[in-house]
Amino acid sequence: MSSLDLGSKASPLPVKHLLLIVLALSVLSGAQTKTAPKKTGSATQQKPAETKPPAAPTQPATTPAPVELRPESVVITINGVCAANTPPEKCQLTVSKTEFDRLIKIVNPELPKEKWRELAGLLVQIFAMSNEALKAGLDRDPDISQRLQVERLRQLAEAYGDRLRAGYKPTDQEVETAYAENKDRYEEFQVRAIFVPKSIGTAIELEKTKAVAEQIHTRAAAGEDFDTLQIDAYKLTQQTAAPPKTDLGFRGRGRLGPHEADILPLKAGQVTAVREAPQSYVIYRVEAKRLVPLADAKVELENYLVSQKYSERLNQMLTSIKTDLSADYFGPPEPPAQPQSAQPAAPAPEKPKN
Image (cartoon, rainbow, N blue to C red; front, side, top):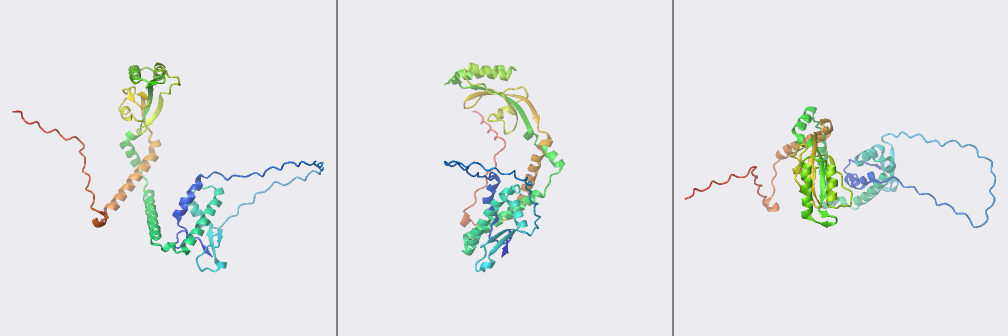
């Protein structure tokens, strides 16, 4: 009889394989219950119901108290899974409470208890198949052996990366500094938009609808109400559908749509020129601007600083390593990219005219 050892080199369970299969459990729906089919009445004449004395009151069912298991308590026993040449009476594998708890933590700490039996069933299946693979000597196959080695190294690298990230906690001052240096990312714009369809009724009329859009734009720039202008735009283009809402709410950079570059420079109350979309012409107006409060941006800023610090540590580590690649095998290295000039080159002086 042997016990599960998730960290043992000889364990028949590659944890990564288990993760790939079991992660789906977190999204499985609850167990389905089946109801027994109702019995139909017989075609023969029914006997009169017998009169029975009233049953004695039954005691309410009591739920047994949960058993406190010790960490080393065996929670899974698998008979018939063992190394080759093991005597049948000793061919058994056990999993302790601590080992299964650790497995749940790795797979999904929020896995509901009603799914634990499903997880155990998958675990048994993987044990059985991997055990047969070991008996067949697949672990000695060069390709599989290298795959296992690469997977182990990848897991170690990821674990080290997680440790680097967990070991750095930005200070409040660092968060405040990052907020001050990246305020553009936390600027939000309250935007309204008027959509002028490119059709009169159901017929596409680009010139006529563009003229309507320009009329609406003139009125918008003069400060008229956008909801009223949107209704008028639909009337002038003979639309039968209800006009859309003009208020797009507050949106940050990267969420202002395809005409973001036209919206960003605007001050409150200013409108864009008429812009073109696939089905309509669009006019935007900035109603107001605001900054996301530091308290609301703190978590994102902390993650940003942790990622930045991780990249710095990774770059320091990689720059301290010298790597030589065989040109005979990999081919010649690609030439370094030429840096692009930040400003256009100055024009050449004109030659004096004769």
